[in-house]
Image (cartoon, helix red, strand yellow):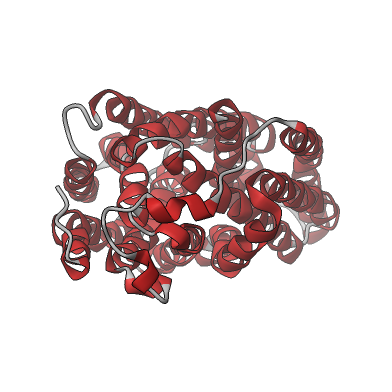
Length: 416
């Protein structure tokens, strides 16, 4: 089962981190400002808000395996939409394709994250999710490097060339640039269709949600009438909302930030991969150290502290050094997602699937917060806009130190 889920996490990473290249690419091809270009992240991640709860309902009827297969088909459909978007160089159609991709991933995330959490002891769930994160991170390193090599090839010369062209000449150059995504996304569509068939025909075991009602920490789940009666879950949703925002900022803005600092796009297009390398290192640390040497909550505290440290360092340094600190945010971010999930759904019992839906809905933070970053970058500059990440990491630290503990006290249960 973990091999199949690992393949799905690879797909999450590959599709998700393509956005880091699509933002500067579409900014050129569709002639966008910073705010408009970050609508790429908005369109992709807002679908998690729209689809998270419907995904939970869908899984109740289909089960995990069929639901994952349906999610892959939806991602394939979204990828296929890139073909007419490129032919007509239509930014709204690109955004629609990204929304459909995100909707499919929302179904996959709603199914796969609780699946990994439930497959073993709750106190080592962060370790299992970290293993999945390695699959995600490897894909995240490969995706921007591969797509960037195709669509951002000669991008610096194209930007300079556009300044001296007539309107008709400029349209011809931009149409040619837009067409570069057609073949890559046709290949992605075909691979997703094959993977959907593989998952559907696999022997992936189903998990009986009713069995989870007895796997609690002593809380009488029968007394709970609503998922909203679990404070540790609600605070977890808030934490993941701000976390996904800073994760996407670290990965999706670093290429444009490098260009802002005067680094050629031919070099900057690899910067997202450096952020993902930092995340991979963090996942490896989590696999080795959780729960043997540090608890999930302590890992979360360390992640928040590193995020604040690296964020401030990026703000008060210059040039390549500042870019390095943005890349290091990947290290700070790596253990937040795998630590929050088990803390937030622990003890939910029969409410696990709907609770997971709410946590997946929190991924919409990646739609809102990077868009705000783009708005600040247009009004201040690309570096000063990074002040936005500091309060987000403070919220993550609050959840690790107090928020989850408060939720436990509300339930009358002490948690280590």
